[in-house]
Amino acid sequence: MSKSGFTRAEPDARRQSLIEATASVLARDGAGGASVRAIALEAGVSPGLVTHHFGGVDALIAATYAQIGEQVSAALDAAVAGAGNDPRARLMAYVAASFLSPIADRALLATWTAFWGLVIARVEIAALHDTQYARYRDALEALLGACGLAPAARRRAAIAITALVDGLWLELCLSPAVLDATEARAIAEAQIEALLG
Amino acid sequence: MSKSGFTRAEPDARRQSLIEATASVLARDGAGGASVRAIALEAGVSPGLVTHHFGGVDALIAATYAQIGEQVSAALDAAVAGAGNDPRARLMAYVAASFLSPIADRALLATWTAFWGLVIARVEIAALHDTQYARYRDALEALLGACGLAPAARRRAAIAITALVDGLWLELCLSPAVLDATEARAIAEAQIEALLG
DNA sequence: TTGCTTGTTGTACGATCGTATAATAAGCTG
DNA sequence: CAGCTTATTATACGATCGTACAACAAGCAA
Image 1 (cartoon, chains in turn purple, red, orange, blue):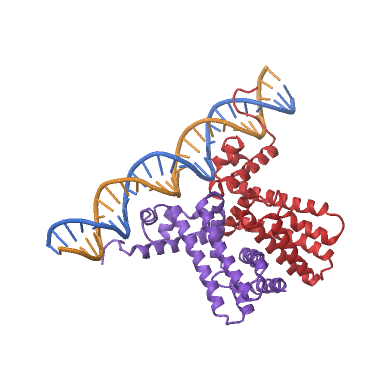
Image 2: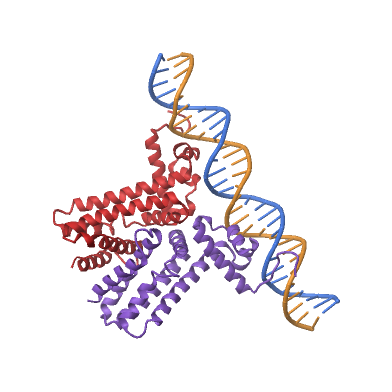
């Protein structure tokens, strides 16, 4: 047992805990509060570790964005996988998952808006955003194709659904008094029904 | 003619120029770059003026948000006013204006995302957001009512359109390569047609 | 003109920012 | 055990942050 707080960890494990601390700080204090010191305090380590493991706070924030994007994709894919074989049910499961935990979460929204703000000023964050959203669209296009939508119409439909879900998710998180998860899902399902004809 | 840069202005005019400078800085550098010094430099005045006219940088940012919200509402209302008397045309004009200048603007998006980020951490900004969006919904509900939509269905339809337009507008500004104004408008119009039945 | 109000500037203060760096401690190899 | 690598801490440095404050200047009243 060491007398100080010095505990050595695997680099990957330490990077992971720093990423989780960054997400927590972003959720609690927004982008303005995500300083190296605040993140290090949240993770229970010294500020120098951020430089040591990530080279700078910018790379840490980008890594946090990438990981949260992965988690969102994984949650959506899991929802589809658990929805059985009916194409329509799989599509609806994908959409409905956006309004449930862990995606429809105020902390996740805080992280997301922080990154939207960074997309403007930082090219590497913008590239991450484009990659993430292309992935969502691809997943949606596959689900729409399984529902029988013509290939020529898939791209536009995927964009429409992504936009609708994003907007509903945003309002659901920003103003829970205006919109709840049940109604968001009902709205999305009705619009998608119209889209599939 | 004074030998220094000292020029006296009406308080309202000076406040206005500080608000415009804040919007410019937010658009160029994002929320992280909107410091008192950067704003004062943009406005061509001394940093002390921010404290003198607004009491602090927080109030200046809130005032900027409120004013931009007013401008967006005014642009939308003007689009409706110029659309003639057909209810359907008026509704579509309202929606289409969201994808045109001055609303579909990268600078405006930067300002908006900056405020979304602030909604999480600051209660007074959240209240401003709720007020703004309630106003948009009310305007949409009136337009939907003129199109013959039953009163019971108007609220949900207004939420759906607001969400769809927000999501399309966001993607249009963040990733112009993926989506242009013409396609955003086409997507929105098709969805609204389905909504009106 | 003189005096008063107030918009404006310039600067200074303490706090916090990101990052660099030297010292230290843990774990591995020999 | 000795020696090496490196994860970690603690601290320091310069820059920038928001705000306070005293001095100054412009316009108006008398």
